[in-house]
Image 1 (cartoon, rainbow, N blue to C red):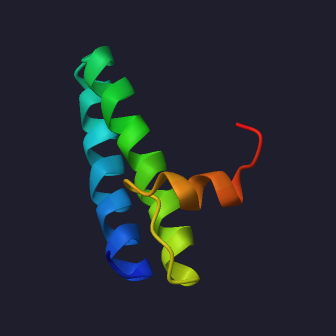
Image 2: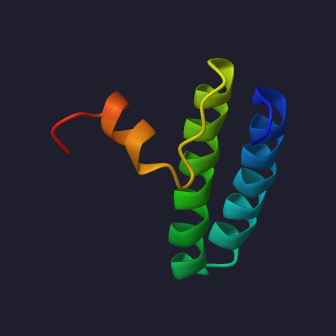
Amino acid sequence: MGTFKKHLDIAREKLKSVNEAYRRQRHTVVGDLATKVVEQLVEADAARTDRHFGSHQENSNESFPGG
């Protein structure tokens, strides 16, 4: 489990790669990396309350019931 800042730094790094891949017209790479950016942002937000979503189904179910 990482800290808020660590996840935010990872998201920023991946976002830079998204922009570069977009400029190179590598559209499937853009889609894959963009998904990972969102994942890191969710993890960053979860880290604020000392939670982790990565592989913990029960945490996800508590935060997003009925899914």
